[in-house]
Amino acid sequence: MIQQRGSLRRRIVSSAVAVFAALTLVACGSGEGTRNLAVHDEGDDGPVVNFFSPMEKVSPDAENTARTASDQTIAMAEQALGLTVAYRTYTAEDYQDKTYDEVCLDRVRSARDDLYLLNSDVIVALGSEGKLADLSGLSSAQNLREEVRVSNTVDGKLVAIPQEVVAYGLFVNKDIFKECGLALPSTPDEFLEACRVLKEKGYDVPLGANRWWLETFVFAQAYADLYNGGDIEAEVAALNAGEARYSDYMRPGFEFLKKLVDAGYIDAGNALRSEAFEGAGEGADFMAGKSPMVVAYWGAANTDTAYGNPSFAMEVIGFPSERGPMPVLSMTGYGVASDAEHGEEALAAMDVMLSDEALRLYAETNRVISPSKNVVVDCAEPLRPLNDLVQADTYVLASNAAMDVEQWGNVCLIVRDLLAGASVDECMAKLDALQDAAIGK
Image 1: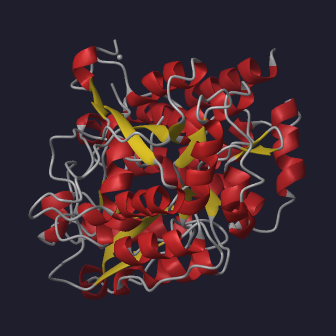
Image 2: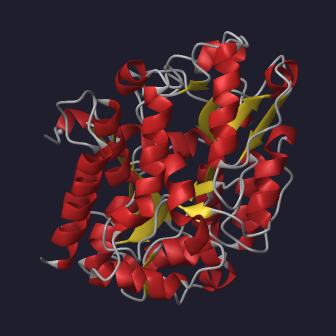
Image 3: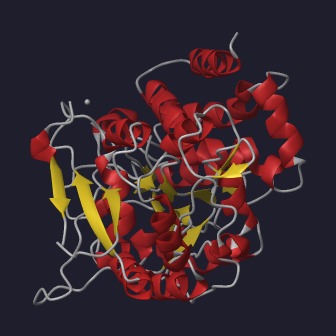
């Protein structure tokens, strides 16, 4: 599925997070029509790499337009290699159109383009089919953080590389917590107690929520031990073989969410029908100090149109787990079709776009976590607690291509079932069914 969703016609963010927002916001509809496809060839006679993405290329000569950091890294590749990156873009107009993910699957399988920007579930599907080239030989691949390599390795092959690592966290109004005599929560029990006190103090919806991001609580509790002290390779192998069950890992997180719903700490009905930043307690409610907590991604703290300029003291912390606060990481990635017509050129372009020089430009412009272990940039002050955890390798992954069951999208949909009234047992049965299908039972 996707990492961030909603209507492309909503105010989202500044150009600092446009690349991430564009990819993740379009992947949620169901018939690719020519009206949705756009081709942006520049007519040069030299080598061409066809790049399929959900965003249009910004003209370098356009007045009053700042090129995105992603475009700048592509320009670096064009200049270094003497080639042209020709964009093909797709945007779903409404829920009746095919999603960006569905269109990507079709186009990669038929090698209609060379280079693609892909969501995690598509990376898993195409990687397992052998439709994506192995990127492990690229020079830029040698500098990747371990979590990036793990998340994008399928059947032993590195098949995608992102330009940023997307960290999700709990955005907290510290002034409200201080007024209520509360410390910031670290564990599930502390979080529940904080919600109880906040509700008693008159905050009807202690946690603002929408229909996309509540799975972060599940991942934090499910995989805190796996990614922080566990034998990751062995445990994932056991899950893929059916010797361990995803439902056993995730039941505590679903039971926790059920408590939040039953106690009214989340407005489940509102969350179920709300897009990102539009749920009860989110967006304007949070910024106006009417709601103490919301879930959002890293970039929301960097922008004036999301949560980047609050009038109160804000801190972004990890999600509660028995190991303490846990950032939840997910990521999109660039991939090359294994049968691409211009495969060698596309791989060379990727190597420039994902070099430390290019990633430093991207990270400094967008103030994000880089996939390169050699690139570290300063972050907005409210993000420091989350950043410190990530830099200390304390996190959980919400997308892991080594797992045969795609994580982010599937768990998101099952959490939505919980919001709609499904029992925890019914949700676990859906997880078991997904796992059984993956292992061929």
